[in-house]
Picture 1 (cartoon, rainbow, N blue to C red):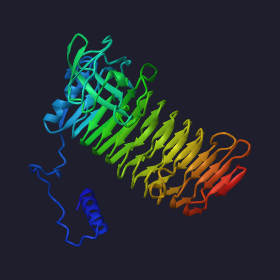
Picture 2: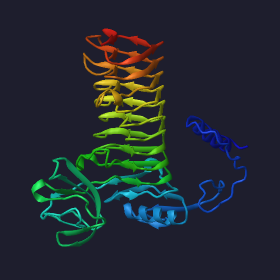
Picture 3: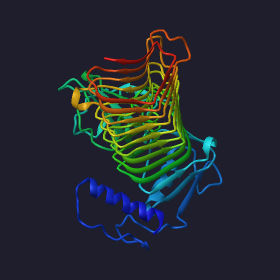
Picture 4: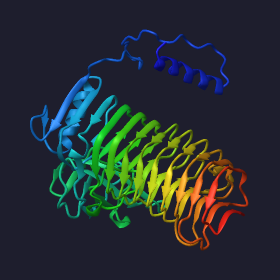
Length: 436
């Protein structure tokens, strides 16, 4: 039995055992065949390959449209590779990812860069069932542009945000690719901005992106958080591999995945973002992040809500303005080990309390991390807040190389329970451990 067949069988057995199921397993697939609708296929030696470039390529162009055309062509043939040749590619909309498509760049020689953002208020009201908007000043808006619409909700006062594409135009009236589903009224401050992710995946699976350089052009774009966009933004997608990707300078998050499962991020460099370097979003299960450098962002690694069974290992979180690693709302059963967390602005590793006891970041394992020179003179290297339970800190090295001042190595809240400190080195702090 080949290794991948064995592992597939093993993990299926483990899942059944955990669920308490007793029915026997099916035999392992020893000879794979392509069968309609079956995700188990032979390991084909050759698949579709399309090159994209400014010259001497299968598809010639220098913007998001030529990349999208290649992605759609390859997806239509059941999957394969889109290879971006060296050059700069300018984006006026996101490239929509497709299942079973690999996007291969040429490293730092192929740069995908977001065009500057333009913004204007709506000139007329659009109701939730409308599929058009009227812009006060359409200068800079073009058919094909990706946009974000934002408004105050007239019923509950919150903010509504929708992503759309402009698909037709008459003067300052634009047709949208989809209906609005919420009311966008002038009296509530409805505005349109050309904001979008560089690569956007919605309900895709078995996607690979590697050897890419992505530039968000943050100084020429408005801020929008990682629940909507990023250099790469994924939602409700499975089995995605991001490898050797440089994501830089986005006015929001670098790499963000929301309600996505089995995402792997390997050897990526995410830096210079206004938001978070990496953002495994709400409900994401079994993320694996290894060998990455996360630098000069608000937060290096941000566990959103309900992120579980993740492995965050052998990464560098450097010079982030607030936190190196932040774990919070119902983020449980994760392993954070052998990471280098240096010069965080507030806390190196934060286990944050949100929304009461039942939402604490419990049952996490934090091992072998190096946390160095955190925050100001009253900062904390590792801060365990609120009602967190059953967390183990083992073999970590917490080091303060500046003067001790009022700095604390590990701070444990009085409400927390079953916090285990095992064989940690804590040096250079005014107080090694604070309980309560």
